[in-house]
Structure formats: structure tokens, C-alpha cells
Length: 382
Ligand SMILES: [Mg+2]
Image (cartoon, rainbow, N blue to C red; front, side):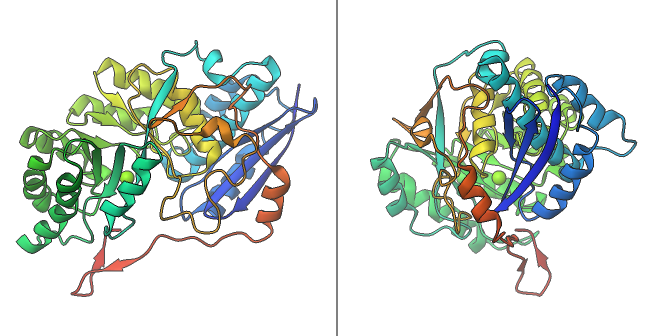
């Protein structure tokens, strides 16, 4: 079998899909994207993919090493996301060629289903109690919300009180019937991270995500020592080597690699094993589309330390298309009692409605994350 061509489709809401075709009629799908940088990643996919045409798609390990090591400059969000999507598509091809789901090829399942959580509250949290009531009716009992709005490096006690008030409403309304993680989203700098964590501690959040930016990861052990709240991070880390540093320094209890950013299934499988060696849990980041989610689920089913899977149904970013709009086998992604069950379709196990994808790609989206400013005119982290 030889790789014949790579096709990319930029579709609403903000996703990039990749289809790799072979000369034997088997095709694999991947999702190489950085949110807001789809076109940049698309260029990288075609640049890397040109060297794959004519090669045997089954040699995933060799292609992965070649895409990284034969290029002098490597790593980073763009290149590792391009490699991630190619890697996912190659695993999809391998599974389809061998008639086995990827989790089978990775050694077989350690669990039958994985707990998933739902986003609530959007960018500026409000009305979360009502949203949680609705989602609980659909079986969810675990949620994530943004931990705060824009936060200055040193902000007032009122900013802390505003941030605490939303999760406090959730605890008031639901007691311990629900769990929730809080995503600081890199909006909080070190001077505010400690007081904010301390103020949130009585509400017993399941975790706090990106308590400071990943590029300030040296502060994670300091913050972890100051709070009992488990700290999570990983969506803005792209290689085993970056995750190694974070694991060695300590402080992170839940690692959140993104299977569309951190080199795909091949790399994240290794990152998961490294985390297990440090007694660190895994909760793959995935506010993306169905192919990325399918790749995450394949890893969740084989990684012992996988505890929780993010997914984007109803997320505030999904303008113009929903998670399963391009999926034929929607029932396989059904959430029951807050879990997605393992299933045995070959490859990634996601059947893509190619007609719909082609149609959507005729009107590609132009998604960018909001650009925020503080009241004094300076740039705010989003
Ligand atoms: Mg996050």
C-alpha cells in the first residue's frame, strides 16, 4: 500500500480535516489544527505530506520520526499539530487495513467507557446553573467553566469575588451532586494565582486548569504546594520533551495533552505513559472536532491513567457546526451516564460524511479568538 494524496478541508466552526488516500482505496482521516491558525497548519500539512506521497502508510513510527528529526527546526504548535493530524490519519488507515480499532492496535482496552465532561458558561460565565440543569438531564455530572474573565496581573479583591461567585452558585445549587473544573485559561498571572486558588479552595473544584500560562510552568510546583486543588495543564505543550520538564518539576496532577497539537496518537501515547510513571492523571484536551475526539478516545481506552475526556458538544465555539454534524456513526459518540462507551469500528472509529465536509469546505470559516484589552488599554490574555 502506498500513500497517494493528502486533501485538507477547512470547515465550520473552526476545524481542519485531513484525508489521506492510498492506492488500495483505504483512506484515513485526521484533524490537524490550531484554533485560529487553521490555514497556517494546512500549509504545514502539505509541506510535510509531500514527502509521504509514495510511501507505505503502515510505517507510522518511521514517518513520525522522519517528520520530526529530518527537519532541523522542529516542535511548536504549528508543526506538531500538522504532524498530529497526519499521525491520526495514518493510524486510521492502519486500523482499517488490519480491520481493528486503534485501541486494539495499542495493546487493547483497559476500560470499557470513559467519563466525559461538558463545558458551561462560555467566555464570560453566566447562567451556568440553568445550563447545568439542562446538561444533567442529558446525563452529565461533570463540567468545566472558565475560572475568571480578564484578570490584571495585580487585580482587586472584587475581581476575585467575581471569579468565586460563579462556581459558588454551582455549589449552592447542586451541592456535591456535580463536579466542576475551573479553567484559568492562562488569564491569571502569578501575583493573582495564589489568592484566587485560596479563595476557590472551599468550593472544592475538581481541578484548576492552566493556573498560570504553560510558559510559566516553573511556578506549577509552587502553586501546587499552596493549594489542595489538583492543578491541570498541557494543551499548550507540544512534545514529550516539554511534558518531561513539567513532570520532573512536579505540581501538575492532571496532564492535558491535545491529540491534535502534541504529535498525535503516537506521541500522546508516550506522554500518557510518562505521566503514569509520575502518578499523574491524564485528561486529553479536546475542544475540537469529531476526528480529534475519536483519536482522544482511542488513547483513553488504553491509558490506565486517563480519567476524564473533554468534548465539544454545545461548546461556545461551535458556531456554524456541531460536534457530530460531519459524522455518520453519531450513535457511537452517545453520552450515557456521563460516559462514552468503547466501540469496535476499525481505525479511529469515526465515519466521516465526506459529501458534507466537501460542501462545508466551500465556505471556510475565519475563526479567531477574541482579542481582549484591560480597562487601561493594555493587552489582556484571552
Ligand atoms: Mg484550557
